[in-house]
Length: 238
Ligand code: GLP
Figure 1 (cartoon, helix red, strand yellow):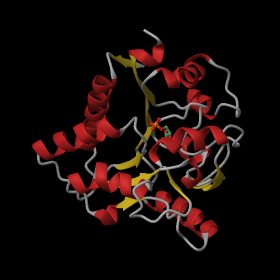
Figure 2: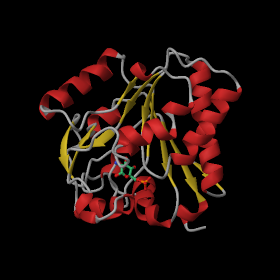
Figure 3: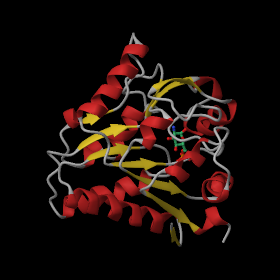
Figure 4: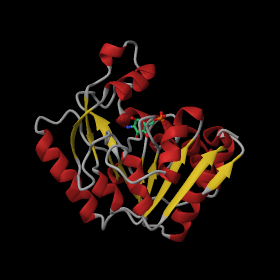
């Protein structure tokens, strides 16, 4: 567990962690997350990669999740977020980047082929994770079975309300998403978990001290044998 002074410090530490993982394994497969938590980390990481002319031609990325029904050019889609915040800022070939297609006509086929993409890449070396206020990871809401794989999920009212801050009105927030499952996440070789700010305190407390329960999905991470937790002081109430 690494505790930084503030959000900025946590973001820098996280960027450094990923940068070093890429240096160590230039053909790494990164699992990526969206949300306001990793936003600044992507900024720092892009700066570090560009300053040092790091070759990303053999790096692959797979994102955790995407809303159902949003176009890639919709500003609230995770496709848009990733392009805007990271992919357009670094020299990674776009064909190496993968995000579930929430506009697919056949969502069942889409989730199946997403699992295949991950398997064909040899699994995920390093997965970045944020957490929802209710303890969700990816879009795996409370009650999601621990043995779930990538699937179509319904979002809870809490998540819809929390994520509505990015939309004009709450009715615009999609009610469904595609998300890697909890087992998909647990299969990753290492995890970098990030949380900042007091709204995440309860979820972080459950991760660090709570009982492992499907009611709080993040608690499953206690069983992962290569987990790094990066926090800021606010989340710990310090
Ligand atoms: C969304 C995403 C999660 C993310 C969570 C927290 O629901 N699907 O992957 O971790 O929100 O987001 P934020 O970092 O903006 O608080």
